[in-house]
Amino acid sequence: MSKNLSELSGRKGIVDNLFEKMGQLAADNGTPQKADLDALASEFLIGKSSTYGTTTFYDFMKPENQGKKVYVCNGSACLCAGTQEEVHKTFLTKFEPEEIGHMTCLGRCHENGAFHYQGVNYSAKSAEEMVTILNKKATPDKDQYVVVSDQPVLAAKYEGFDAHYNVLKEALKKSPEAILEEIKASEIRGRGGAGFPMGFKLDSCRKEDNDTKFIICNADEGDPGAYSDRYLLEERPHAVLFGMMVAGYVTGASWGIVYIRDEYPESVTIVEAAIQELRNNDFLGQDILNTKFNFDLKVIKAQGAYICGEETALINSIEGQRPEVRTRPPFPTTQGLFNKPTVVNNVETLAALYYIIKNGGKAYKAMGTEKSAGTKLISCDSLFNNPGIYEVEMGTPLAKVVYEMAGGFKKPVKALHIGGPLGGIVPVDKIKDLSIDFESFATNGFLLGHASIVSIPTDFPMIKYLEHLFDFASFESCGKCFPCRLGTKRAHEMLQKTADTDYKISRELFDDLLSTLEQGSLCAHGGGIPLPAKNALQYFGDELNNHFEN
Image (cartoon, rainbow, N blue to C red; front, top):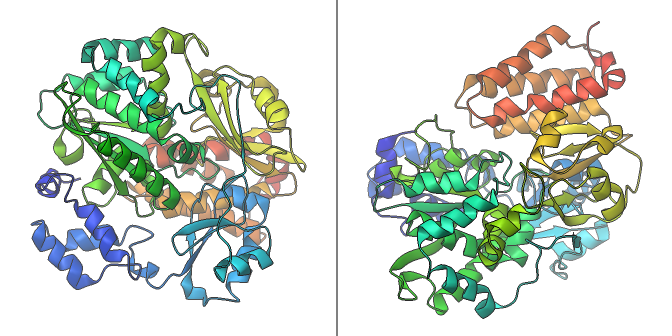
């Protein structure tokens, strides 16, 4: 990343934002015009290559996106459900091939048949239903997924604006230090995948001496199979915004940015309406409630890049740079957005602060396990009998979620891919050994991550699933470090070749490639993708051996 570009992008503050303007230039035909990008470069005093280089990275701004009229979801859950070939085939009766794009994923993993048309997401159960939608004679139904909680924290009923924000009024009567101590006492760990202690991150930012600080909500939920963040953004937006305001109060930040993926258009609309409600009730701006607390909120729409789920790539994105991962240190809490101290937390982490501030850190810590406190949202895909969102205490047996709450499977399943593309592939006979907490998964060689569950059917070839994973990893690599940029592509090529021909992969070569990815990649994208491959080779060797030498 370039510190100079960060400074130049930040000259106008967050309101007049370079990245946002790039997206606006692409809105009409799918990609900005070169003359417009040149003018934008002059406005922000940066090179023309910077604006062009940035826009060519993103799915929804790159030149190849020009003229796209409809997008098919190609996420893992839809792949395993087997619905998307029919979706694409139906589109070909209405559109030219070059007018059809892809999105990964639309967060409709509980329904499948997912596609995006004219700014709206749909799930179609048949070709006839798709044609009706394309003829604009149908609107998307409200999600019918199950939402069950055996310990309502995140899924607790919204009590209305006044009752909800009375909790904030009381919190602002206390010192930032006192609120921070409650958060530390809760021992809440980040729910985006890494499990990093939230209190430590807030404290680190608070200690920085700077007049400008930022709170960023990472709502770029790109893991295929995950839609828990979408649930919170659309059904509990004020829990998320409350958490951002508390984080701002604790750290001394004056701006909160909700970075929402463009694949979730409904989430953008709902969160923007919730922010306006806060503004209408004088909860944003200067001297909020006469407490000398200054804070404002803004939504920024992403433009299609999975790597923006990594916090430093996300920061680069907001600055209008290519979303490449930054080396650390310095960490974002010291030098983040526009080189200012910045805290990045995911949607679920921030939403949990409402319960913590209302009930106290000790009440939150009393739930879960010794090292994994609180509750967790689980996303179950359409191959479950009861697909939906399940909130459980940390430490709940995975078997309870799978077989009792979600009702088991609609068809034979051989494995669960848990925690997104970088998560572990869990054979069904290992379900009994796991519980929903960070330590249980790590001890058994898996990763809880975002806690999304994609069911891999017994009749779905594991080699094709691995091919799909490395195709995804290669496509979504930021390209900054060569182990990830080259390694993911070489792995995809080998897996594709052995899946489609009688070619056999050298196991020694493949193991060496996975090791290089793990040890040499700059971030968890390249470093994490070997995990599911290793799990598959360990537990499904009988099925995969035919594709490897010896």
